[in-house]
Length: 296
Image (tube, rainbow, N blue to C red; front, side, top):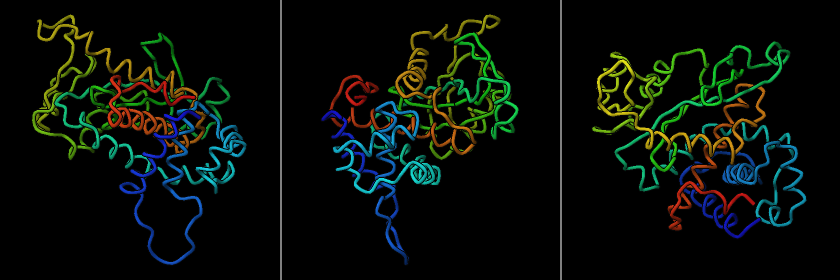
């Protein structure tokens, strides 16, 4: 484990313990392995590219440096159960890290949707616990069909997540994003600019964004008069964010087989990316979404 990763985990633990995990009250024995340690260890798992929890726990229990930082780490079953129960803390940590960065006050947000495959065989589709949630969808960027869910992400220009959700790929993109904006309306500031792709066109969606004081900016469709052009250079920002989630943080290799499992593993990867961006802001790194210093 590098010195940079050690520094990131130490700083992250302090912030989570101070601002994310509530103070424990009431009776009962205090857990030896705290929620602050759990979230910090979950970030380390993703940054070190251990997609499977069994292999990750074997690595932790055989690594003296990690055991020195987390002396009471549980076995795989306990770690899995604790992490699934910590879903609200994962989501809270993401938004608190975002609010600690200067990009939180940027006027420009970017949104897009990307595929989250959950199975590769027909038998998996038939017997999976995700059968009532996941369906077949089409990934235009890879020109392929997949079975799974779709991640909708609203982030700042440096890639810091602001809002996100998982949805059935058969549901319309405008419908999902409308619900996402409605549920997180308290985060929207007057005059905020939302950059989307041409799929988010339509009079009703434009009225919705205007009602929430959002200025919608998207590429022009072929059947429209010139307004903004294709915005290809700026749109590449969100594509690179999705690529970071998939290539460096293993979003497509999440391994979740239940709705809670997929949600937890997706939140875990978004938290890891948020932690890297936040720490790069704190240490003055130029490329805010660079995770190279923490992945080994």
